[in-house]
Every structure is written in structure tokens, then in C-alpha cells.
Length: 215
Image (cartoon, rainbow, N blue to C red; front, side, top):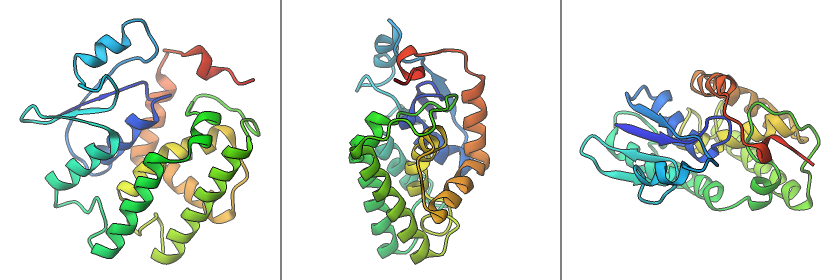
């Protein structure tokens, strides 16, 4: 399989399925396309029908785009791994939590973008971003209390992969979090797959000026 992704420093959507593949030890080839360059769109369109990353190209040449669709495809294909919780009721909750991340939190996304190499403590704290952060914090705390941790639904799952880029944002922008949410963010950061992604991001040399600057 091949996974087409953007810069690891910036591409939050790419991070999600990459983590699932890496954490569960599924072999794959990665193709990184630098974003925001003159030829980026053409390079991506040559591999991804949507013109966006990520895109998974399976062994039988099926193209799957969109991070959540890729994760669902992997969960179906590799049933030996509990990518979603095995219990149907808990799995429904995990899917709801993941879908909320997938479609929401616009204030957080627009004011606190992912830039792993950067440090913008206390910046980007718009009312919309702070409201989203409060919801994420409450959601994490509720999941951890109900399922006992160390991750949102016990063991690491797609739900944690969906929120890993949020953890990266929190590491960069350093908003105030509850003690429970802060501890969860540290556990996610320390996961071997997440650490590998961060290490790769720190080694990248490509830069996107408007993501590296913060007013």
C-alpha cells in the first residue's frame, strides 16, 4: 500500500491515517508531497482524485481519500487489530467522537494551525478557538473517565489518531488545559508512532511562510 501525505510538520489530516498504519505495524510506502508550492496541486492530483492529501492507494489500486475514510478502510481490511473498540456501543461512541473532530472545531483549526516546529504560546486564543478547546478538554475527560484510559477508549484507537493533530496544536500554542487533558496530551505525544512523526517533522526543511508566522 502507498499513503500519499503532505509535510509532516503541517499536514494534520495526513497524520491521522499514518499513525494508524504505523501504530498497528502495517507495512506501507509513504509519498510526501510538499504543500503550498507551485506544483503541489498537480503532484497531488496525479495520485489523489480529490486533489488533497492524504490518499491511500491499496494493493489492488483502489484510491481512498479523506483521513477518516482511510481509517475506516484500514479497520475493515485489518480486522486482527482493534482499530475501533470491539464493543459495539463503545465503538459507536468512538465513531461519534472521531466524526465530531472530522467535521468540527473550525475556530481551533483556523486560529491554531499545526506547525510542530513552531512555538506560539498563548497566541491564537480567539473566543471561537477557546470554546473549541473547552469542548475538546471536556470530551477527553469524559472518555477517559468512562473507559479508564490510558487513551480515549482504553487502548489506542482511531479516535486517538483523529485527535493526535490537536495534541500537536496544543504543544505548539500551549492553551490552558485541565490536568487530565494535559496528561492525555503527554501520553499521545510519547507514543512511539507519534514520536516518529514528530522526529520526521523536525527534520523537514521545507517551509510555508504563512504557517511559520503568527501575528
